[in-house]
Length: 174
Ligand code: HEC
Image (cartoon, rainbow, N blue to C red):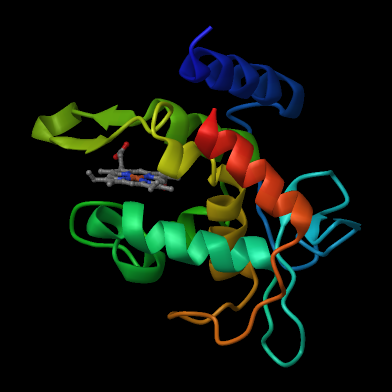
């Protein structure tokens, strides 16, 4: 089965489980770290989240998301998710967008051709440089939206865990 089909199937299942289409407000309290799996953090609902220490040190995945976002997404969404005349300010979108909606939008893309609009969000479901880093992109943008993460490259970050390295290698190689 092609990876894209698998990813979309997983996304669809997740969306059903979590309740796709339900827009919910996110905030710092909802995004608080409730569990730590080798430096991959999750909130109380099990959704990926960021961790920012008082001195500004971010978790590895937030840092990785910063780098991926500013190579794959910034051309339309603006540096650091600050938006452009063409595509939405993702640092705002993620205040109300669920994890499931994020996954399905990025994997499947979205066309908004109403009212002579020609804006298209490409589907990234078959682009390894994006789907191998889906959660990193999500936690980075979540940190920008509700975690007070400033614009620009985070100055300090946690080390990359062996588990993160292994997951990346197997996704990029497979
Ligand atoms: C070619 C330009 C382009 C690129 C590259 C792009 N996007 Fe988009 N994106 C758009 C447009 C345009 C929309 C709005 C579509 C609409 O109006 O429905 C959008 C919408 C979105 C939304 C929904 C936002 C909302 O408020 O509903 C998310 C989430 C998103 N993009 C994430 C990403 C991520 C993550 C990347 C990088 C992997 C990315 N996009 C790369 C053009 C782009």
